[in-house]
Amino acid sequence: MELRVLEYFVTTATEMSMTKAAQRLHITQPTLSIQLRDLEDELGTILFERTNRGISLTQDGEYFFSKAKDILTIVNDTVSNLQSTDDVAGPINIGGAETYHNELILKSIRIDHPRISCHYVSGNANQTMPLLDSGVIDFAVVMGHVDKSKYNHIDLPYEDHFILITKKDNPLAQLSTITKDDIEKEPLITSGQSHVDTFLESWLGQSIDSYEISGTYTLINNGLFMVKAGLGSAIAIDGLVNTEGTDLCTIPLSPTLTVNSSIIWRKNQALSQASQLFLDTLQEEISNYSKE
Image 1 (tube, one colour):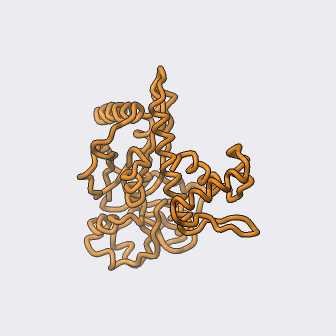
Image 2 (image 1 turned 60 degrees about the vertical axis):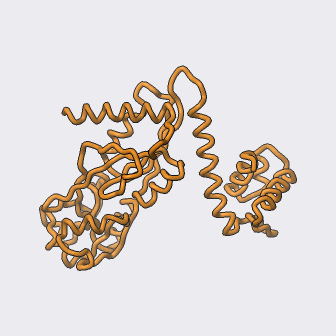
Image 3 (image 1 turned 180 degrees about the horizontal axis):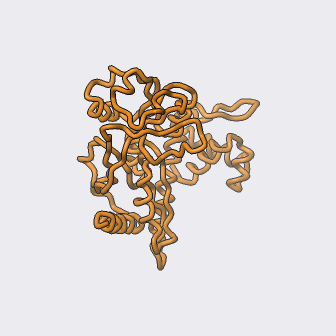
């Protein structure tokens, strides 16, 4: 299977039009059609449903589209990282948790090396670690109780604090801090990450099943929409949202609930120049941070 044909497929699946895809690829439509049918024959499956109204992906086509995009991303990044230059250049792909401390991580990348680019995929460990394992991303920022035994890792030198986000007309908004007893009867919206329940239970001192969980989120903005819609109050990392000028407010938890973060990457992974420079610079930033 040629990478050129993969590009033909991805472009067609993106445009959902043979005509537009052929124009983007600068080839004729009959040539594109023949290449895609040959690809289907090679794979032994149908990727596109063809009707009088156009084309659409089959279930196998959707799966192949997802994997083909990942393959092309890895190839393009590899080529970019190998290109010779007087300065270090190339992409660094990171996936991970939402934390305002990401500034410490991200500021390490382009210092004195403007030809390095950063691509950050937001998501919890359940979403980003498979991307790390498959090579789609180079590093993952993970929080809390994540098994790091099969990865290299750097523990980051700071803690994130949890808060409660609620509507201003909620009686809880009148409190200066939130205890586990205060939210005993409050519908709660929590992160959907797999280990969060166990983490919250350490603060609650009991099973989370004793509380009403009205929803979960993977990105906090979706959690905010759920709070605004009246589904309950959200437990989230501090510093990620600005409630000024809204009908929401944030309240710290008591006792304080904190979580540590780490940046992880695959063991025995051959790092690009850009990735190695990123790690070296990050470790220097951490050292300076710890001395402050």
